[in-house]
Picture 1 (cartoon, rainbow, N blue to C red):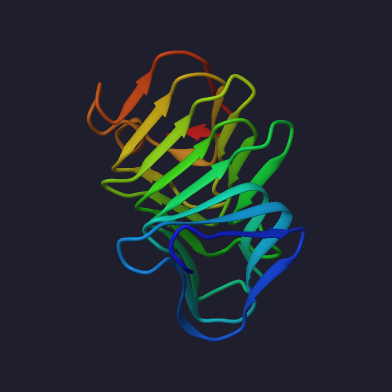
Picture 2 (picture 1 turned 90 degrees about the vertical axis):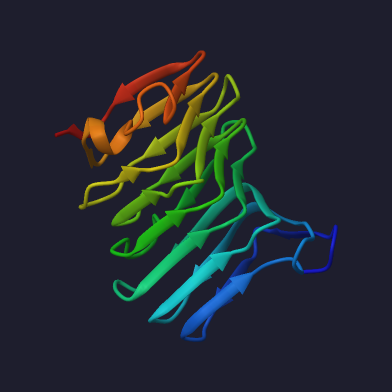
Length: 193
């Protein structure tokens, strides 16, 4: 994507129909925004790794998911933000959710609900999950496997729902650093093992 561009897909769908590595990215060192209003970014074949590149912000509401049940993954190196109150941005909650999502960038709920529900989820070292808006909710709800946090989770307002299966060590490996809460509420909606 061109530097500084805002690509508004509205309620349309971007299909990725080629196997292997796929990417939505601005040119190196640049920034771009992809806005959705009920639209989708959709892996439509397998095996495929779809990377949301550094400098890219995906915001609004809709879905980022995969139709196929195996061999696919989504890697976020940019920013994903559920930015519309009373709306949901689903990540990994597709027709089949038996694939993985890795966050190396920022995934946030600034006004709406960010619902993360693939088979596996990893907030990698350097990755950030955040809830900043009073109307915002972050749901971490992988379907079968343990999810882990090697990055940071910041709750400033709103609601954080910890679903799926996780351990204290997987959630808060560096107490006082990997999870911070300055407001909002935390609910355990899954299994703390």
